[in-house]
Image 1 (cartoon, helix red, strand yellow):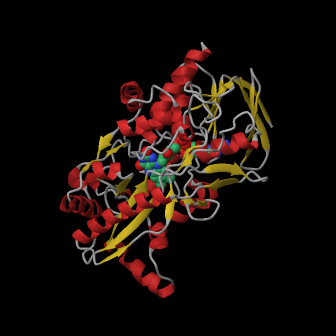
Image 2 (cartoon, protein in one colour):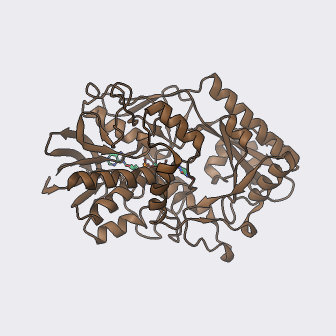
Image 3 (cartoon, helix red, strand yellow):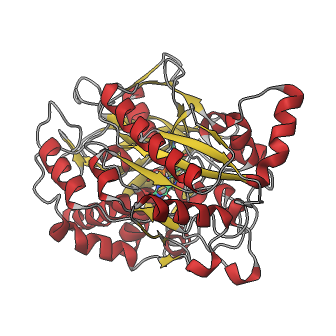
Length: 467
Ligand SMILES: Cc1cc2nc3c(=O)[nH]c(=O)nc-3n(C[C@H](O)[C@H](O)[C@H](O)COP(=O)(O)OP(=O)(O)OC[C@H]3O[C@@H](n4cnc5c(N)ncnc54)[C@H](O)[C@@H]3O)c2cc1C
């Protein structure tokens, strides 16, 4: 099957970056096609149970593993990408993150003064609010009390949401499998519908498997949900398939010789979720999932941050150290569990390659420094649970990577980076990238707001270049 249109731009991946760039290019009058491997879910019709949600909203049926099975990778799939399943926390980078990016990449605009206007441009497109303190649930209260008792600093969370109807007792645990009331500002409800109204062609269930990057015409070959191949052509290509998706596609297209750093420099902010058991009910699944963020300078200096999200039952079940009847009995106490996780600002870059069948292989481990950072974080979590009266603490041993970053890192040196500071691949000025794959290293801060800001900046460059 073949589409005869020659698009001004093809965009592979309809997640955070894909949504922002598709909208900006379409608004600028460019004819674009947004190609997405996953499904498009109509408003309010996300899967209504955890197992279906894992299978339908993630690659690999919910979780993929690194090469030695020591790290679980959560890789979202579907129109909206990560913005469908994430917690929607939006944070600007601090000086520390930008300084380390400048050093790693040689790119001078990685500083707050030059990036702030692009964060502002992104913020204009979505609703960002804090979570009102009065709605904090039991898990949020444990987090706040534990921080106060231990002298740790915390701050209100900024989230990309419009109206979560907390006053109606809305239960936000559903948020992690797609917001049923379209409050979360996923690109599936914000920018993609806007762009479609302005003429964007959205093609869900199209998995790009090969790119042919000719000078004046880029061809993308892919297969649909029925397994049949089809072809799209455009004057330029925007890669927005995420850290693993972009590297995989370019590797499958045989571009590693021209791009020697392709697939290298992969980071994940490995997270370890811990549970505290309390005599009184915590009900961490009720109300807003999180109300506060850790803002402690000593945590930042030690390369970790804490998060207070409550996972849904399947994820919690994986952490409870028991089997059979005992496991069942312990899971009965789920409403009495508090949950805090540590996210490590990882320093050991991983590498993405592909198998002969096109399966991504992720070689990524924690080094000694990463383990030290994890242990400092686990110590702080222990202090929080202990000081707030937990009767038992279950230390998470399961490393999960859900901030997948790098593989097509931006930099000035074509031997050590994949993309230029102007967001095109070294040697290919009609292939652009500004999503999580472009990150030079792990910032230790939630990535999505910076992906939005970079995407706004990249879209501006693309539009200028197309004039
Ligand atoms: C559970 C969870 C919670 C998170 N919470 C937060 C948070 O609170 N704050 C925050 O900042 N970040 C959070 N993140 C991370 C954040 O969601 C990601 O960093 C962000 O979505 C990455 O954006 P992206 O545009 O690079 O890729 P994505 O949003 O992942 O989009 C990539 C899209 O490309 C598609 N794709 C891949 N390969 C192909 C192909 N070959 N052909 C066609 N399509 C393809 C994928 O299916 C996907 O839809 C969370 C992530 C998870 C999983």
